[in-house]
Image 1: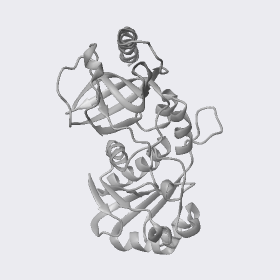
Image 2 (image 1 turned 60 degrees about the vertical axis):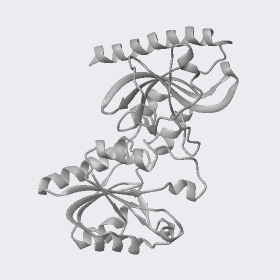
Image 3 (image 1 turned 45 degrees about the vertical axis):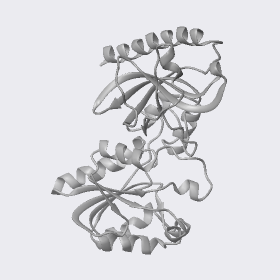
Image 4 (image 1 turned 180 degrees about the vertical axis):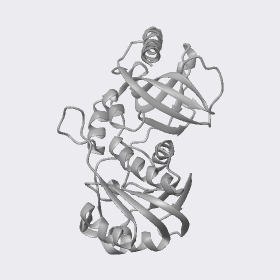
Length: 308
């Protein structure tokens, strides 16, 4: 997958999906799939326009869901060939609707444009789904606006806001039903206190990022992908009251794994919240609970395999 900057020349014929794609939910996936299908029909490439930073942070809104690296990982999984990214800053925010479209058309060979019906662009959101035909279609691009998707049986649309609400509540099942793939984090394993190793549960730790919308504190059934191999895991998000440690962290015990992965990048995917965080009084008490957690994790994934 190629990554180019907004305004950078790229000559291949593109079907371009427009949006922020801050978490790549099912609605985003529909827009991207439409662009990908159109590109495949004439041997072109599927491209996505997004931001390299978080526009929400620029205007003081709630924390992000995914980092740019994580969004790129999710987009790669949807078959995107090219990511066109811009930094959302005061200069970008001042671009008129017409100037934004001009830059894209002048730098890219756009054969098709896809967007959701709530897409907006340009200063003061002057551009929206209704203006795409004028700004791109009149220049030869095939323009299609995709309808919003709604949560099954509900009036709430599938959106980043819905994902954030479910994530903050620890409702990972709901989060995963909204996203294009199970919610995940990417990170480099770092050294921590090493307490888990002293009672049989060594953990892989990735930095806690308070600039993102984190899952509710608790213990989760997860999968850990490292060096192309995937293992089951149990992940603690939050504090460690048993040891009087009030600093939040993300620590994962990897099942059936014995190796040194410090300094390596891992993908941590979340599947189910097992319980909240509790003080078990001692390392022995915590070890007993972790044994029960491991048994529960094996049951969860065994049942998932049986359902396939």
